[in-house]
Structure formats: C-alpha cells, structure tokens
Image 1 (cartoon, rainbow, N blue to C red):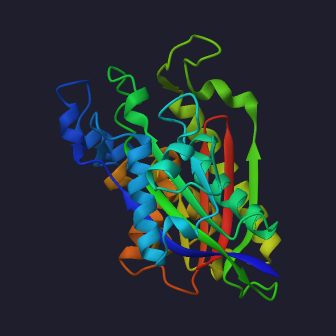
Image 2 (image 1 turned 135 degrees about the vertical axis):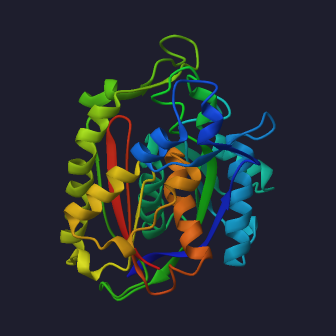
Length: 323
C-alpha cells in the first residue's frame, strides 16, 4: 500500500527575539509570571520585511535541502496559516512563486493552531489518492500582526515563525511497522468559537481585527479534547502510549502539555517541548518543534511519533507516523 513518508524538515524564525522581560514596560506582567503560567521565556517577532510568505519560503527551502530535493520535485504545496499575506490569493501560491515553481498546485488551509496537523492529513490523502507524489507541507504564521499589544493576557503568549515538511509516496505492507503516516483523527466544534477568535474579517468588519481569548475556558477544554483524538488515533493504529518514541504536541502552554501527557500516560522524557523558545506560533508550532527534535538527533528514522494540536474554532487533531 502507499504510505506518505517524511523526507525532510525545515524551519525559519524571525531575526528579532523578544524575551519576557521586554513586556514589563509595556503591560502589567513579569518574566516570572509568564514563565510560571505558560512555560514561555521568549518568542520571535517578525520585522516589517518578514512575512508569512517569506518565512514559509525559508522553511520550505530548508526542508527541500534536508530532503535533497528541489522545487521541481514537488507536486503540491499545502500551507497552514491563519495570518496570510493577503485575503487572496492563497499565500501558498506566493510561496510557490518565490520558490520558482510554476507547475503543480498550491493552496492554504485554515484550522488555526491545528492547521499543520490538518495539513499533514490532507497531504497524506492527496498522496494516497495518487494526485501528488511529493508534497511540501508548511505551517507559517505572523501572529504578532493580529495581537492587541495592550492585552497582557494574550500578547505575551504568541510568536512568529515557520516550519516545513516534505512528504513523498512510499510503499508499506499495511502494518504498524511501515514508515509514514499510520493513523489520524481530526475534530472540530464551532460552538466554542467565542472562546478563541479574531474580532475582524473581510465579510464582517472589513478589518483584520485582533486575537481574543478566554484563557481559562480554552485550558478547561484543551486536555479533554486532546486526549480524545489521541486515544482515537491509538485505537485506529492498535497501539498504546507505551509504543510511542516521541510525542510532539502543539506548543501553546507547558501546563497543557504536561497535563495531556500525564493523562495519556506518556512519559515525560518522550515529550518534545519548545514553547519556552518560540511561544505559541499557531500552525508553525508543531513543525518548529519537530525540526528542533530532528536537528538535535532525538527523532530518528524508525521512531514512532505522535503529533497533536488544538486551535480556535475549536479544531483539534492528532497524527501518528513512523519517521
């Protein structure tokens, strides 16, 4: 059977690093308060010349280099983002052009922080359906553009960045030992929209708007929803938490990561945590964390890896793959 195998990873971060202490003169907060409640110590903030497209392009080029491929080898680009360069066309098309790629097709996917997990699942279906042999999956965000910098409950949480993955068609026997995507579970529930959203848009206010969040409500739902899709994914694959080599969750809050892993019985040493370095980068969160763990040698060929994310909507999902 056809399996969607990971061929390469790449990442890109804005030049500017903003530490927790930098907020102390802006809003009523402190380094200790932010770190204790979220696990975040710094985040990267995009300059005027750094955009979702430019960061996505840089991450894509790094992933292609890691895979030993060129844009000519790619059939499809799927970009997960909530902060596109323009309302239209899709920022994926702009990245396609930046890469000098004038064949194939490209589109954006919007599932907020769950975007990369949704995008990997989408790419897997295109590959297994025979419509693409190699797919460039990107998560790129410039959330600093939609933050209310006077709202201390949200402005300290988010950062900018991009991560990319090259996936290609491979062959498998149809067993858990195959390399590639093995199982996935995706969910959404629009009744929770007002708990995490942006208060603007072309069809409503005609403005970009700012991010709004009911933090306690999001936290309250997060652990239960995350464990729900992960347990469904485990069941589909016929495995347990003990079989995992690595758990790469959405990097939103260290407390949520710890609580989810504990509830699922995933050992602490198997959890990849980069929220302290990047903050919450939404759809870029999971691929950035993956890139760090691959680059430092933790994740290696043959490892069983679980990806998970939850975002505004609410959307949430999990993907199991063998590296």
